[in-house]
Length: 539
Image 1 (spheres, rainbow, N blue to C red):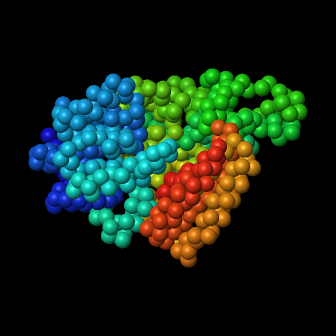
Image 2 (image 1 turned 135 degrees about the vertical axis):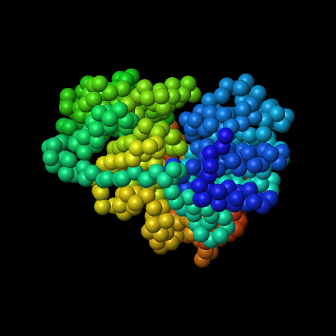
Image 3 (image 1 turned 135 degrees about the horizontal axis):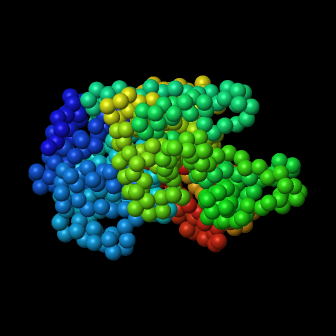
């Protein structure tokens, strides 16, 4: 039996179902406002008309919860598509869809190509997530592909999020998309109260850097006393961010990539998170033979250890890419947390997206500043989205929620606006910066990456491509670079980067067409050139 919808939910459902044909709709609803119920009732509406529906989620970890909800409403009518299926399972599911045996498909980004006939609805849940973009060839963004597929099929496409991407919100503001706003949580539940802890004051009080502030420790204690649950977000894996020699300042870098190696205590190894290189942490500095090796920074592994040390009676679980090797690992930990068998759940951004745990009344955010230091114009947007999303996991049951964010820069506008959780205010502030700097969503962007094992060849080829682009430049274009990429070397490949900004997408595509032909004619040999339209990462 479907629950009764709120006035906002009814308005959203009518927007999705009222008229046949292609309609892109941005469903902007605060966390806990009941977007999933709108999806299910829209699917039910089209199912009654003999139509099919496709539901996309950004992460494999979200499929069990969503599948369970849909399976209860639509038994034996759902197919699942994601990369954790075996080859045989993927083929079986694909054939069931192709033969028309199931009218509903739930999956991650590649499911956008599912062979559904008579398609009437595509839902892109958490449409702002960067995991919808495939970074390998063939490069595509599942959200944008979903919009195009809906257009070709004459279907409705719903982009749902509490924190829409700047691009989607801009499309709604310019009336390219229909826009529906859900302003309240279901059953009138209040949004959680958000508090920012100044970690500079914590450092002054404790005389050292700490993982968990006194305020957060106090709040966790209170939840344990009341039998409530806590989620702690730290968006870094491993135990220590890097190893440092205190005597000479040497840091342990990956031999193949220009990044520091992360220490993982559970396996007693330093790991590169880009190429997978592993090595034993040395007892002495290889540069000066000093024994003063210091473990700097913290990751989820250290956070878990700290929580177990501080709260020995609590049951602590962890979700990150290291702990979640298989789909059954997600189901075990998330199922245990949902059943109340885990008191504190620590993890990376995997815990921030779409989960619904009614017993969670406290969310803590550790290391909230780190993303803002990245050389990427989307850094503030992603930080705001992550903070708002993880805050939304709190207070989704009958008890009010609380959020504690730890920051060394509490006055930054991203944190101040995250307290209000009003995306419209963030969009207005961020738009001024984007317009001034000629960045999306007000321009079209393309990235050119030149890679080679030889640094000189990569630089020479990038310079030649830059000169060619300069010869085609118009007043509508801006070309940045060439310059070494922020991550200059990955997997022994040196990387040079160029960025093209254009006020006209048509002009950009015309330029890129000529560039592709130039690259093909020049035959650069071992040097490889990659073109990425609308890149989600500039690292």
